[in-house]
Length: 74
Image 1 (cartoon, rainbow, N blue to C red):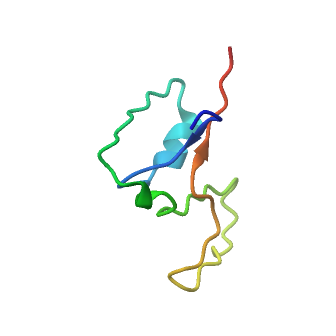
Image 2 (cartoon, helix red, strand yellow):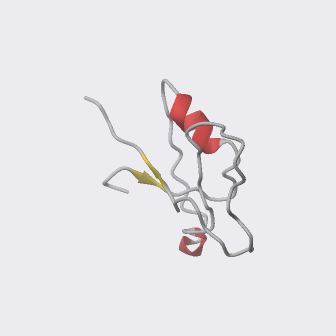
């Protein structure tokens, strides 16, 4: 989006880790996916491994965000 949000399409997996550690990021815009996919993912990246359980008990529980937010340095 124009304010720096990125919504994923088919996979998220390790994307949050890759984006957090990346030196450069290349974004592919693909309009073949339906807009209904927006909100499909629950993106969660814990700050530290504490050994605590992640509180997801039901299939519709959400603890993360629907998108990534990138800020641009000029």
